[in-house]
Image (cartoon, rainbow, N blue to C red; front, top):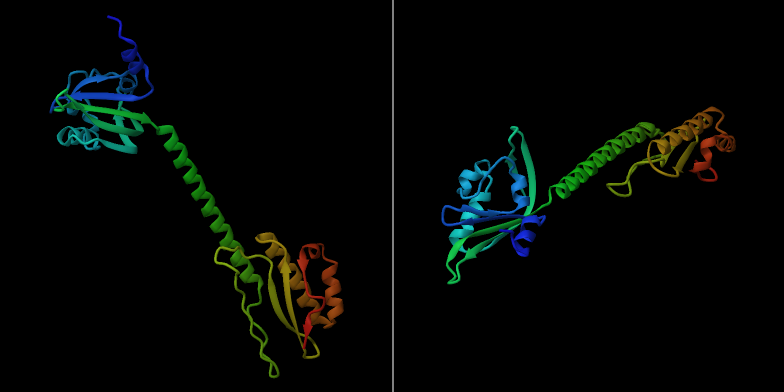
Amino acid sequence: MEPGPLESAIEQAPYILIVCEGPDLRIAALNGTARALFPGRDPAGKPMRDAFADLAGQQWIDLYAQVYRTGTAITGQEWRAHIALPDGSTRELYADFSITPWRHPDGAIRGVIGGGTDVTEIVRARLAAERHAEELQQQYRQARDVVDTLQQVLLPRGLPVLPAARIAASYLLAAADTSAGGDWFDAVVRPDGSVALVVGDVVGHGVTASGVMGQLRAVLQDRLQGDGDLGAALAAVDRLPARRIATLPDRPCGS
């Protein structure tokens, strides 16, 4: 006998449907989508624990039993199942599901109706995106640590100790998650005994900015420790190609 429109639609629906009957949860019906999840099996008429023994310990059968016992529906999202296949491999399935009581006309529990939607590909795509995002975060943290270390190496290890001056300085990031870049300070004793205080800012962040900062600082320090001429030191910096992305005071502060 050819199935009616409703039965045909249920059979072909892209929705997992497994119906069980009685306290031993014998499989009363399952549609094509459900059968496709369990190839090589003929579960009809068998108790769930026998038909789907590979699901034991994965809570699915226990959920059916709970609904039959309590008469209260249960729903869930993105629950995982491992299904044994005929070739010995295992299929991983994620499903959104609803398990509801199946009742006689008088309201007594006849069985359980379980329906679900396969969301495996959606979950896998999200998990892959989360892993990729975490990898990018890890790469960012590693790169930031390299830049921070580079900048600390390029900054002066200490400031000169002079009998006629007290000098102190520190470098603080504006925020905990701000990458270090090309900001720097220096204090250079000139040949005449005076001190040139230098504060600079290279536009941007990262290795490039820190590298430019190192070039500028090295040229300024060399010139100021050499002839001590402030104007000549700044002119030397102006001739560097890196000067175009840096900001310096019009003149270092001399004391």
